[in-house]
Length: 161
Image (cartoon, rainbow, N blue to C red; front, side, top):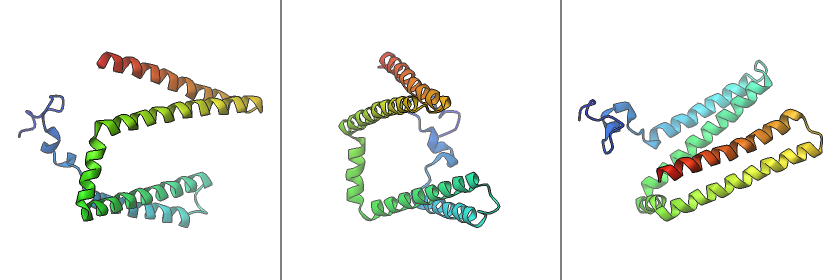
């Protein structure tokens, strides 16, 4: 397959397979590398704590911890999938099931609504406790942005479907 014939905007083409760097990298390779990078970032933050500002050290500790945890979780999941292929197949079927997808989307929508009203509740608490104006405006802005995004996506998907 040549590159010119396999353009990404044509439906049904396998354009990712024609570009070597676009192929999926196995979890067993990048996950330990991500974990090691996380440990290195964490060690750098801890060893250079006196010479770094507190915020930078805190960001580096958080980033290093996150990279290490993410890398190790993905590595352990790939090892589990390797050792238990029948469970991996069942999990894949379940993940691709339309009913489970609908349940996930409904749960995400419910969580978004709950967070939206939690943000508005925190804004009211900030108003009642004479909180800083920027906090109140930021919370109200986040609430308004979520409502506008929800409306825009509703219009987009209603036209699309």
